[in-house]
Length: 568
Ligand code: ADA
Image (cartoon, rainbow, N blue to C red):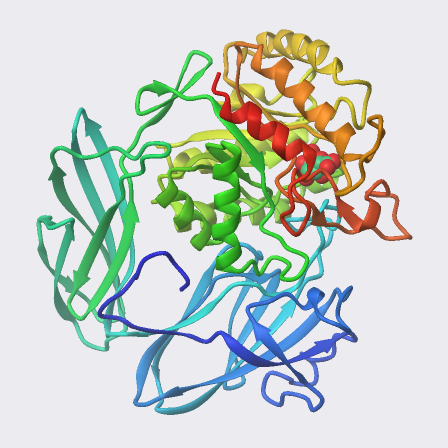
C-alpha cells in the first residue's frame, strides 16, 4: 500500500496499480452477458487508481463499469488482494469466479485466495457508482459522485499461517505505558501448525509465544509489554512508535503514538492539557484526480494547513486515505474522521431504513478497524447534518454511537448538527459540532450570537449544557479572483468578511473550544438541471474554499492565517 512506512518486510507484496482495461456498462448487461469471464471488445485503457469522472467521455457517467488486469503466480501461492477504495459497489472476479462484493467507497477490504495455481490470472472488477436513498452517501450529497477504483490495489503472498490483524492498546501511567498487542492468526493449511509469535517496538521485545493453530482455523493471542519513559504524541511534536509482529514466516508492521484525549468540563484535554482547535474541513478531492488524490498533493495540502496555523483538520465527509492520515500522524496534526453520512436533505425513511443503518454501522466498523492506531485521530464523527429533531435520528444515533464506543474508548465521539437550537441527540456525544451559515444561507453574521445563546439553553435542557462545542462548519462562497470595491455575495471580500467576523464571535465565547471553517479548498459538486439541490454552486463548485480547487489562496486564507497564527 502507499503508506508513509513499510508494513511488511517478510511478506511479499506488490501493487497492481497501473494501466487496466476499462469499459462502461451503461445498459447494465455485463453480469448477464458474463463479462467477468469474457471481457468485451472495445475497452480502453484506464489508470488505476483514478476516477472515471475526470476523463473525457465519462465525465458525468454514473453507473457500472468493468476493469481488468492480470497477475502472475510464479508458483502455487496463497494470494491476498487488498482493495483500498472502490466507489461504491465492487464485485471482484478472479479467473471468472466471483470472489467478493463490497459496498463503500472509502474503506478497504480484502479477499484471500488460498493455494492459487501457478500461472497467469485474470482479475476483473465490476464497479458501480450508483447511489440511492439507502446508500452512504445517499444520492443527495454536496460533492461530485465520482466513480472508480480510487485507491491502490495490493497483491500479497501469504504463508500457510498468516497474521490477519494486530491491535495495539495501551494504558499510560505518567511516563510508562502498559501495552497489549492482540494478534490474530489465520491458517490456510490443511494440517495443524505451530508458530512462534514475537513482537517488538523500538528495540523493546514483548512476551513471545508458541501458538498452535488448527487446520483452517483462526486464533487470537495477546502479548504484553511495558515501555518506560515514553514520549507522548503531541500537536506539532509527534512521537511515533513502530510495532513489528512476526509469526512464523509472516510479519506485520504498524505505527502508533501514545497520547490521551479526554473531556473535562467544557474543555478538551490532550495529554492532560487544554487544547484549542483551529482548523478547516477538507475534502480529499481535486478537479484533475477526483478522490484519487495523489500523495504529492497531500504533502502540499499539509504544508498549506501548517502554514495557515491549523492544528486540526476534519476529514469531511468520509474516511480519508491512509497515506494522508500517516502524514498527519507524522506532522502532529489532529484529525476528525467520519463516514459519508451526509444528511442535510435526508428523509426520515432513510434514517429508519435497516439496510442504511446496517451499512453505516459496517462502515464505522471498517473505518475504526483500519484507523485505530493513528494518534492524529481524536474524534470519530457519527453523522453530519441529519434531521436530529426526529425519533428516527435519535434511534440511529444510539446505534451509531453505541457501535463506536463498543470499539474504541480512547477517542471522543462527535457529530455535526445543523439544528443546534432544537437538537434532541446532544446527550449521546462527548463533543458537539455545530454547522451554521449565518451571513450565507441565513441572516447576517451576527445571527451566530443569538443562535449560540439558544443552543446553550437547548443543551441545558438535554443535559449537555457543559459539553465542549466546536463550530464545525461556517463560511461563505468567494469565487477566486472576484474582488471589488465593496464586499458583495460571491466575492473574495464577502467571504473573508463573513469568516473573520464569525471567528471573532467564536473566539470571544469561552465555551467554544474550536473552529473548523468550511472549507479548505473549492470542490466539484453535483449540480443538475433536473434537481433543485445546490443551485447556488457557481461553476458547479462549492466555492467556500479558502483556496481555489488548484490550491491558490483567496483573501480569506490570508486573513484566517493571521488569526490562527496570532494565538489566543
Ligand atoms: C453543509 C455540509 C457541507 C457543505 C456545506 C455548504 O454544512 O455539511 O458538506 O455542503 O453545508 O457549503 O453548504
